[in-house]
Image 1 (cartoon, one colour):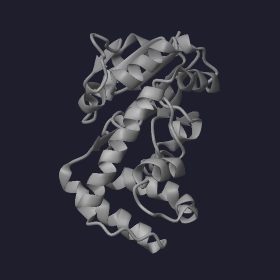
Image 2: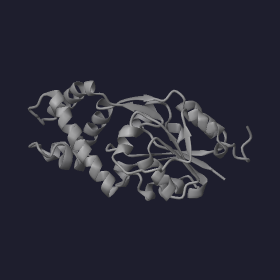
Image 3: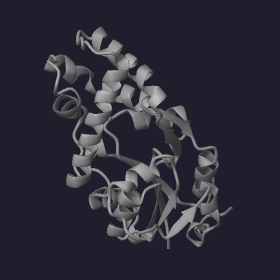
Image 4: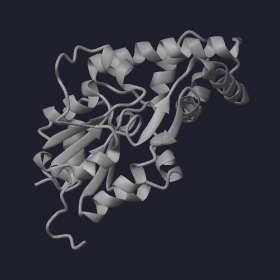
Length: 255
């Protein structure tokens, strides 16, 4: 019997998009923030954002190959800003804020319209809820869950930047299940990718995986050989989950 539902964040509970026209604004925000902390980088905003985009791709490729996630300071010092002469103590102090600004300005994020109703319904049916998110920032996911007024729904939240490894690393899925007091076979994972979400849930022995398409899905999965792999359930709206047998109310809950 399924007892817990665990969710991906970006692309699943929230819509996340990136467009080239975001580059100038993103670069400007980051350069201004760095300069306000005594780190001056002589580069045009758009060019700086494009530089970070390339370094981000290189780092993410390494992360998917190794299944490791570094802390924000290590990411920015060893990857994103390694080509610049940066005061390392100053960078260490602001690295997580810098990562937060990157996540909020390189990408534009909005809550999926049906997310709150789904979480309310699952909680009312007696399920425990969690989040596992790949992120290079240690604060952004928590902050934005509060901003969406969703944080109170979740009994556990795992972030790759804190855990030190990233989906589909099986230990993230096993740890989240244990926190919820559920065996892996009593958990369902909901995400938007095969390469990270479906593979991780399946390797951990979850009861089922559910996948919803996002703006990120194609780019995220295209770099990896997923073959004919697919989730156990495909949905076009998160509310479709409520119609699945795996989401039937837990018997002990009075509705």
